[in-house]
Image 1 (cartoon, chains in turn blue, red):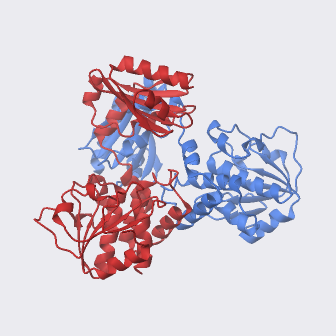
Image 2 (image 1 turned 90 degrees about the horizontal axis):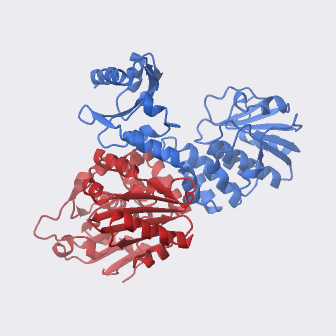
Image 3 (image 1 turned 120 degrees about the vertical axis):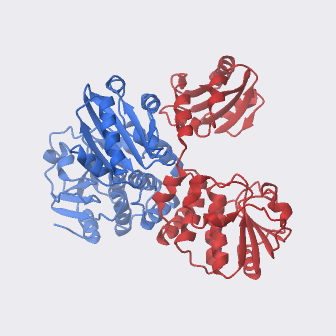
Length: 311
Length: 311
């Protein structure tokens, strides 16, 4: 059942005990929004537990009260209300079976599956933390520095630190209020941009393979299987070519096993979903992907040929 | 003579013709703040010229009305007022000698030298564009999309896109208003993060030299003279090691000529100005620099020894 923000606040106020949770593989919005709500509930005198069925990445250790987050190791959890933030029910891990309380779901993902007793969904908000910011007002809880840091982190995470096109005037004003309440922008951004030594060196290796094509309108990173086997993750690699001046389409081709390549594409103008479709892949105009069952050199040639046709 | 914001607006309103300028080597705040003021003055029916004595970096071609900016090629410029934004008089190039009108200086740099007839200085503002935003209100000019893009760009530039510690609630609220007026956050950030192919490949080469020391508490990039000679600029290189998890001090050592090294340091905790001082350099606790008259290997060893003492 869809409910309003006011009704959401009322549900929270009427519960004496709550289990709060968010998605596995937690990011800054999952952690920030659920920690902020947890702290607010404690301040309102509720009994609350914060359960996330996954490891918490080291980078978030700066978040106030992060140690309050537990894995659902007990047999079961009794509560008046299970609050799921920034997630649908299928991604909360073992919390789903261990806590059978009525579910209040608070989310900003348009893809939310609606599997909850009560759902407050606002897909116009850039982050669930923005909704928690609104709830603070409804609940008449003045965010302290700790809550402000958590909400700011959620907002910063899901907007790429105010770079993505989901950033709204509301986003910036919520962030302004959180800075005023004591959030430290530079601490959050320093933490979020942290990378492991391994990740940095992997990226350096991959950047050696950067090549331009079509007079610089296409830039690619080409990782053969030998190199791929030494690399932990290729997350963010495509950004190193996407930012090259004059580049329209950025591509990342990685030979994930000998003779099979996985391809990611980003564009500033051309429709890369059509390139992907030519290889039975999919995506959007500006972000798409596909696979080609060929060794790196051949896959690269086939891909560039297809891009050449589109240019 | 220091004047108030109201008096600054009055000076602008009472002039019929203005020359507007900013600093050589112009950045997003120089261009954004002067373009925004220029457009507002034109809308108020003034005659205005926008002069900057330098090339305009290609990356800023997205700024509305950027083509209005001219180099001071004429013999002289008559105007009722010379408005210098984001700059002191010694960095406006030939504009200083070619326009002899009374000077109105609008700036946010605490280091402003005060060489102006009228000075509005607010060192509490993160960007001169924030002051232009305030002036728009004083002048009762509603920012249109073009002015909003320019002001947003200035603010984004000088706050590292809201990452630096100079980011205030006022900053975020001004940015919110500019988004509301039509500024596009993702277009600005895409433009500002653009790098040339050469810059990206130079960085990739330099990243090959990354080394950790002292159990990962120190990370360095070490560029010998041979590599240095092939590199255009090392701007931003130190950030690639600063972001490594667990790193307190990040160092960049470059052998700028055979037997002479220039050193930059950034820290999250330790006082790197003391390390720099040991080599007759200077700086702040978290950002400092010095030179060592030695080849790379020796300079590196001397530097790490000094850092080791401090740890």
